[in-house]
Length: 231
Image (tube, rainbow, N blue to C red):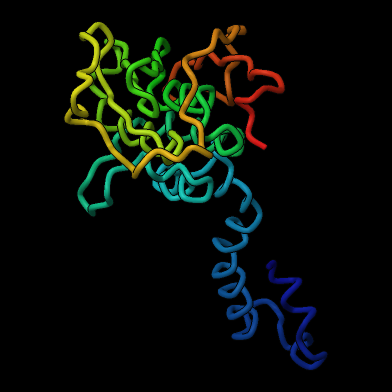
């Protein structure tokens, strides 16, 4: 608040006393200086919550607002972020869309591509293992297996077990789950497993927001009304 605005809030006697060089005038100038930082923050407060404008330290916190904080490892004061900040911004910006398609092949693939910046993830349900999903990771994303596993576990249907394997590895063993399989309880007849990977047409590269240290992520065209779309 400017000095003149503060002065107008004072009684008339104080306003007459607030002449240049007076003690009251000096106090009003100090008040103006003290208000300036807070007013600057309030003038641009929406930037704190915009995915591509928020300060870097706040982006990880924003992932909680859109239910994407499972991408982050268990928090430790000295733990570095598992992904570049630009990737986290992408996940926050697309949080509503990812929530809509959670539990579907499209939703899982989109989350993986946004988080890693890599395409080519293969989702497969072996015919001899119903309610089991094998996610094959392209070579460019093998270094992010921990992040990929956390995303897969969060995006899959609850009744489905899962394996995360590098693309090109042999088929998963059918006698017992692999080391990264995560059983979540007995299969339920009322809850279908993730269907085998549909042929989803791909569209052009659509940049999402300004480049913040990350390449544009190729986006799939969402499937139309089908059994894959959540109700």
